[in-house]
Length: 309
Image (tube, rainbow, N blue to C red; front, side):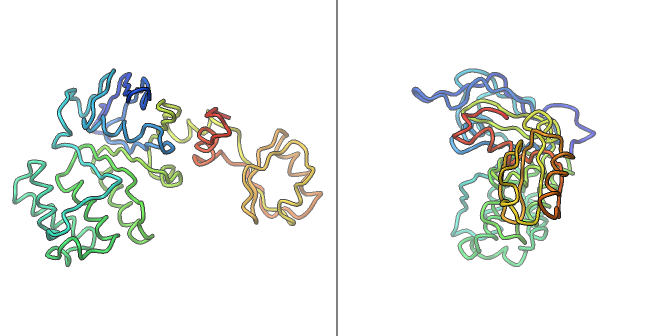
């Protein structure tokens, strides 16, 4: 997704710290988001994600460090080149869909004719053109969420910040929104994508960043992160299931899915396969890199103490 026409940095945080009383919400955080990339932003609840997003949007200011957005470093609120989809949705329910979208475009300084054209394009793109003259309160939850997305992108932002964009969507609407986000990326927008859906982050993002206890703990491509954190996993399906693994030395069951088990082993995988074959029919044996979900849990789970594998 990285634009070949833009080789700069859309967002740069340098040594950013934010303290509330005795609590350090974000601690000495530095990161760079390349222009034209889809940059995943993950972390457990209370990790400092929301505070970081608010500093990027200049809703709150850091106590130390600097925030540079689209080459500009100042203390004003988010500018006209930034689109933002908050996790907590909010639209004027008594306004019609077309009016509320035109209003959001005007807030970003968009000329009225361009705004009408953009609103018409996105309503058609989302399959909502028939709802243009209906009040927002008449929309279903999924339709309202798509309207909220249009409000974030109607002014053609250079930087799009999405906070849990797929929360509560059914599979059909999820696919529509996902393709629209990818289309924005293909057209050169830089997208900062905050999510708890690790599988979606794996599939969509060029880079993945994780914050935990206010500090950066992951930052890079998925393949780089996988090579640096955690051992390879063995995905296994064997006759007898987990019972067939009882007493087998050198293995740790990471996750038991019932019909399928995920293991870490301290022995050579081929030796493990030979030993398993002696216990029953092996229907699946796959050596795979740890998923982002596995890495996330290994870092953030309370009984792990926040340490990497």
